[in-house]
Length: 136
Image 1 (cartoon, rainbow, N blue to C red):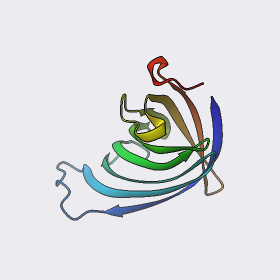
Image 2 (cartoon, helix red, strand yellow; image 1 turned 90 degrees about the vertical axis):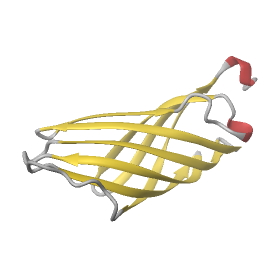
Image 3 (spheres, one colour; image 1 turned 180 degrees about the horizontal axis):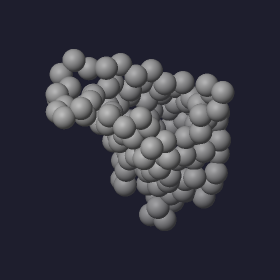
């Protein structure tokens, strides 16, 4: 299945982040999101990022646990993020952590894309269920 929607995000820097060296800025941030659309949910998580002295070059990893409704089914699941910017060129992978689904979302699989245009955050979510989960 494929769905789209919008989300809001709040990132809060955490004081206990590691200290970078040689011009590298290391950050740890708390994540809070609210998803709207066929994914009607909230999430909390953590992000680790590294920003280099070269403008437009950085990397991040994050985990967020999403809780709410997906196409009317209630449960939770975890998204894992891996993002890199190379002189402004971005590559981002977001995947459902295998076997992280609970409740009616048990067996959830999928990938998500994030699109930011004119300050609006949108998601595109391609998802399915493991055959053993019995989703139809």
